Image (tube, rainbow over all chains, first blue to last red; front, side):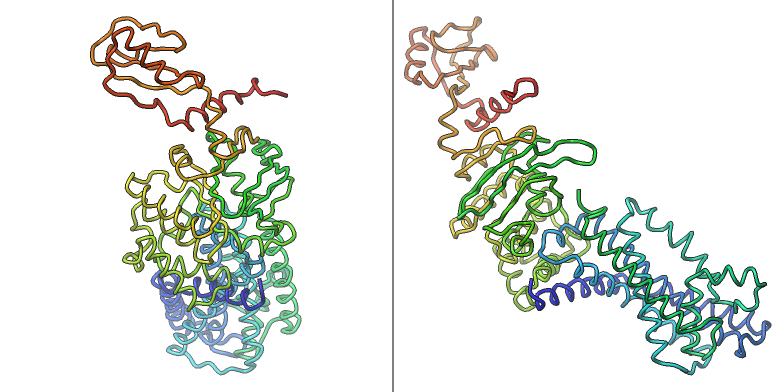
Length: 257
Length: 310
């Protein structure tokens, strides 16, 4: 396939993915908007007003970046894991496997589709947050870089999960038992500096801490960890996950006999 | 030029099943080729390997001279596959399914839409273009898979039991369509359980059983190998005993119906003379099975495990 043909094929998958999640918007775009609005009302307004300041900001301002990242993480992951697994489950993956598309085009198409949903939901949540607080962007480039890398990383995670999944239960295990606890314990609602030293050190092993803090640095200008080290670590994970996903796809793991 | 060349293809699945035991196959450009075999013989595995859905264990596959190992993209551009099972997204619209498939082959959207319209019209699905695919009937879904397989205009079309579960009228219209595109130059490989379909459509045939090719020849030569043809005769008057007709094997199906095996060495005239001598009046006569079916059963029976030549 020529580069131009590969580009057309890539755009075809991305368009197909966007068409899928916008067609079922009450399942994909509406729920995170409602959930995050509830977080803003309950944790931000009602409870937050009693908590007072955190990291030099009022509690609502402090949790907004974390909640935006939470939306990006959950939706990037959720889009790819459900879409790619459904494609496997319905055997429509065969439409792609019989075509001359190289594995990297298929992978890129699904990943970008997942990133678009993650970032679109992030944008919706950001706009909703403006009804509750004011956000001033401190480091725009860092904010955008973190969002893109995080969306890519979790889209890749969703893809790898879907490759190994054999039944629908298998695509909910990781989000329920790994992703959600790591996100809640990833400094979305609190500064890890508040934790006792032992638990603070444990928290530093949680990769989501770095993503949330790097994003918070971009928006508010404060972080519990070194932002540039965080960006480098996320980038390294993206490269590792990409190579793993590509190798699995080329090998046909879970999709070819 | 060969449309498809398979050399010493083997496939052993992870569970140890040897689905293909070193098959060789050649299909010429423009041919209408039937690949027959009982369930589990290795037909779908062969098609799976050709269409890259199954990883081979060993051997070589080339499509129009392009190796699937070294020139994969070029080889895949030449093939269109219509699988046995429906494998499209049930929630997508008919038109979108065909246009999206074209996109996977790098065909730009305007051309993809033009081609989708052309093939959906040819297959009588244009009126259904905006319907979700899950709302189509079984026959329409099969035609949708044919339209999808043709949208990148492949030179070789592979159909895995395309008329399974399709009513007679629709089957005939699909035969006409396939005959027409074959006449226009497209090479077609077909697997089917309807041997009448293979006999009336295909010029060459391979029979696969237990992962080996047991026959590979042109249809005419194959049918000439049929040593015995069995006929059903409906009699005017009932009989009580099996009649003895010299040179023919006879069974009594019921009091008014005879089953007669006619060897290739005997003519039907001889049979009728023998019947007339014994005052049998035959009201109608038909083949017990289609000729290819009869031959197929004999070949497969010969190839039963334990009866194979080593």
